[in-house]
Image (cartoon, rainbow, N blue to C red; front, side):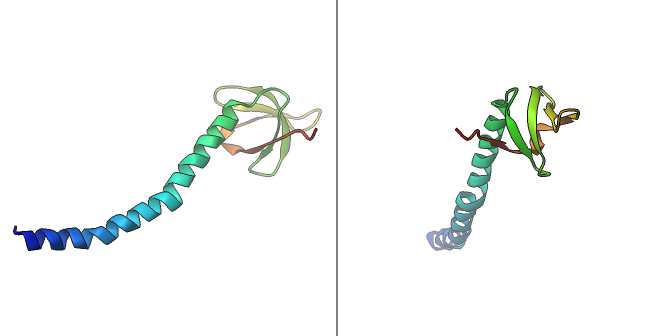
Length: 94
């Protein structure tokens, strides 16, 4: 390979590198940040916290465990929920 051929290869790969960088900063990095925040929120759940599930149910955490979370939907109904299905934690209005 001579210098001109190396320059052509580099010039042809440059747009692909730019597209990958744009894709990384606009798609991949924000998703990783959001996943990290969700994982931290799940780890911080404790008894008495109010949550919203991805199905739209509002529930109260009874007991967070390793593989699931026990939640109370009303006074009689206690169910187990996979932590991945917790959409968000409801902050108490003071």
